[in-house]
View 1 (cartoon, one colour):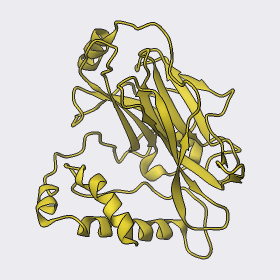
View 2 (cartoon, helix red, strand yellow; view 1 turned 120 degrees about the vertical axis):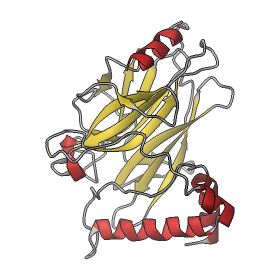
View 3 (cartoon, helix red, strand yellow; view 1 turned 180 degrees about the vertical axis):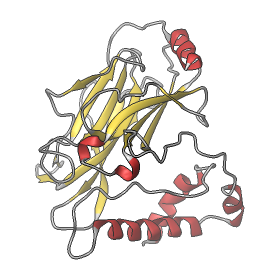
View 4 (cartoon, rainbow, N blue to C red; view 1 turned 90 degrees about the horizontal axis):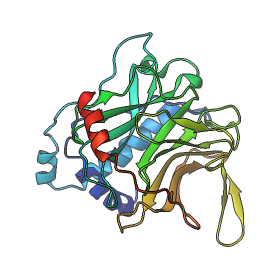
Length: 281
């Protein structure tokens, strides 16, 4: 582990003020070489996080021992579709161009206990809370759409509409099965109804570089966006985790977005309605 990586992770680790312990989702990838994929990832995470933790001061270590518990819990049920809850993505119910409202929307990936079963058992739901610390209440018992996905990234655009970028687990995508790895879903309100876009890809495994070349990656997942700093939520960059063919190592890439990517719909005065909906749940 290089010193630069440990130093770079410092601010991320320091921001986790409620961190007490870390749980990893079960490995969903393929077997690389003769070592089980889960062992590879566990070893990499252990070295990565230990280096980052050791780089912090003793004062920070003491502060991070305080825990406020889980904000959204799973269960030991063997039949519940979202007994295992992970891959959270939170979005505050506020925007510079809209009336203020309180609350946080959390998109998460749910699956059966210990994520047993086929990849198509990994589905998406939404939970809400009055503040980011939780506790969060699930929006509904069933997933918000039936298509299998994980790694949701949720945000609200300039016009007040909701969007998600997702890592698609469909045939021809998923974990090294083809280019169909990125999908987009959208809704007028966070409570739906949600529309899952199956007609076009949000992103694929192919990445174009500024020198005119391109790379077709074995895997591409965990999408999230960086927005403009003017409060207008204009997407500027897409960040995804990638992995090449024939290697155990992965990394993240940053892709600049071209053109205007905000919804130019008229402003809607529905912030109060959203806040009331959160309280009712």
